[in-house]
Image (cartoon, rainbow, N blue to C red):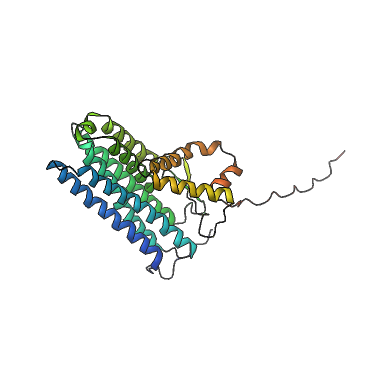
Amino acid sequence: MSPPPQRNTNPAKIYLLPNLMTAGNLIFGFLAVLKIFDATLAREKGGADWAHTYLVSIYCILAACVFDLLDGRLARLGGKESPFGREFDSLADIVSFGVAPALLVFKIVLHEIPHQIGWLIAGFYLLCGALRLARFNIAATYNIGTGTRNFTGFPIPAAAGLISSITLVIISNYQNEEELVAGYADVGLAALMVFLAFMMFSKFEYPSFKGFNWRTQFSLPKFLGAVVVLLLTIYYITWMPAVLFVSYLLYGFLRPFISRAWRREIEEEEDDEPPPQPEPPRPPEDD
């Protein structure tokens, strides 16, 4: 019989820096919701800056993605992971990466879909995101599959980032509300939300980059490549985040066909496999 999992002696302990990052994630998610309502009100009144306010809400969701990335890195770097931090992170995630993107897409285009299908699609995405977070917490609590460095299924922060960045590209390329409604943005975003909802429960594995931390050493070409990607993201903020999130989505489909050596190089993963053991000598055969 396997020994019972060890319990944290103080599961309610709050570590400052990781939970500050989680608080930043939650605050930016809340700001995104507020800006979505402000943009909707301005749109209904015929204001000229409603599209800009929607853009601000999208940037808030993307900022929440950055804070969500930082809280896990800080917790693992200092060995400060705790049950409190995990639960707090999930509560923040359901606001920033569940409610905010679902409300964003619904208020921009999905409300135009007839027969109340739009809110059903947004609600389905939100439901799948909440179920995924609950499943992840159960797995972490009972140590089910926590030894792997991969996510099974598309993680909800990446799904929210993909939805938001694609919406950012769409809004930036439409000049007015008539073009937005008359185009195929509603159909495209609706299909994307349903697809990502199913992807969150798929069997595709995505790297969590848990082996990547502040002490990870880069070679000079990889460091320069990371700097170039960062500069391109800042300069082309309108469409570069969409490229990054789409690339991460596609990586899950291509990952089974990539060699293990290449995966270790891309994911900064240490080779945890034990070296092959020599075969025991065979007994002599009878004549």
